[in-house]
Image 1 (tube, rainbow, N blue to C red):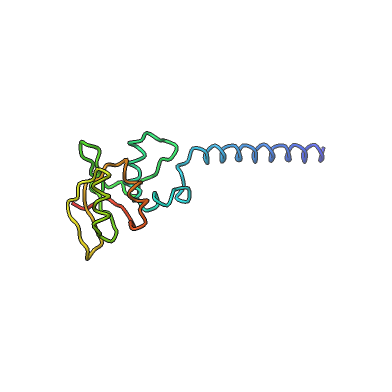
Image 2: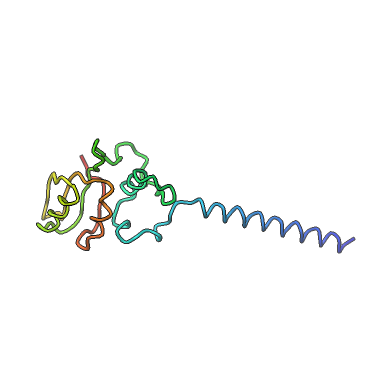
Length: 142
């Protein structure tokens, strides 16, 4: 009798552990891509902007949870699919030329604050972020 109870308890424990393991594996597969899995260029892009890029691409596997749900902190996107962003980098003519070559429209630059503010096509932001002189890209204040 004691052996049967011990055996039954062991079987129940194994089933519970297996159930938890399957649920955990399923949840891990469905979770968004962690910060570590992002490319170097993607790490330079603010998560709100990156979420818009992923949404525009339609790639649900690499979904990124935005940091802020506050509607005032949304990324402004115009009818041409360009986001209003602040590119943090040393302001140099070569970088300004690259922004324009990627379809961007520069609104303002500041050498003192290492900032280029402008409208950039969402789908070209990763290429801009890949530039070694770019430190960060985030939504611009308005």
